Amino acid sequence: MGRIRIIGVPLDLGASRRGVDMGPSALRIAQLERRLEELGHVVEDYGNLFVPEREALPGVATALDLLPAITQVCGELARHTAQAIRDGAMPLVLGGDHSLGAGSVAGVATAFAERQQRLGLIWLDAHGDINTPSSSLSGNVHGMPVAHLLGHGDPAMVNLARPAPAVRSENTVIVGVRDLDPAEREHAQLFGLRMFTMREIDERGLRDVMREAIAIATDGTAGFHVSCDADWIDPSEAPGVGTPVRGGATYREGHLAMEMVADTGKLVSMDVVEINPVLDEMNRTADLCVGLATSAFGLRIL
Image (cartoon, rainbow, N blue to C red; front, side, top):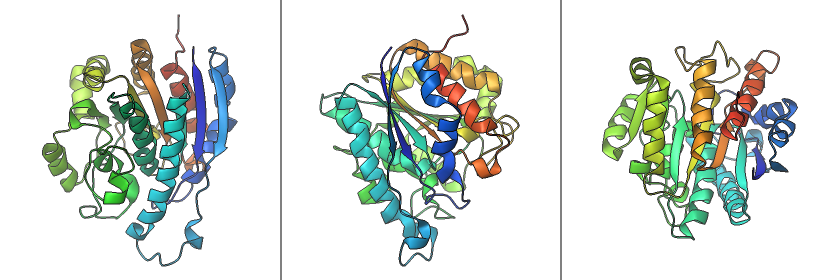
């Protein structure tokens, strides 16, 4: 077992629907720390990073006007995740909206680059998150983190990793996609990014898809980061999300994916994001996501 450093990021600036800033609290209420400690891990909860209130930011007329503030939060998060890796701990980042992934992954990649090592990335999401500021129809930054991690988009966000880009397309994979913008379809081809849609999961089975995803994320890397958006699970199981899309992974598919991640022994860091308690039912979604995290960190049925 290892050391896990919990970092809360109550960020809702990247999403249009409010409420995901309460996600870190919901996960803690669902006994995340205790359930990880029961697996034998040493858990350090560093509390929450400071995130400015949307209403307190000057000159905000559009969603894209929030990009500088989000970049600042992601920069601070990158410093924390990089330090966690240097300290021999695995950062577990609690969101908050998915724009934080641009910071969490950048920091881990920076720490690995200091050792001349590469990082792989498995992104579990109903959405592609590969828009750029110039391509996004909504301007919502939580739809852009993967593009920035691959080196496309706003220069300040791209360069949170040292060196940039944070990850290579040949080591990056998105699993569970079922809702893409036209620009994201183009970007997937342009960036050379492997995306496993729900149709491919339906046809091949989750086990086969995850085997290939893990192979991509571990090819020449020292380990991989898992960024788990609660909406990759079907909303019948995870109702407390801001952008639900029917036809997602089942409860057991979610756990199988995480159990396979744990089996590799190469998980180095993780995000759990986009839990919106305002839209949830009795904290069901947070409880589910805590269960997924425990599977990723080694909980076994037998």
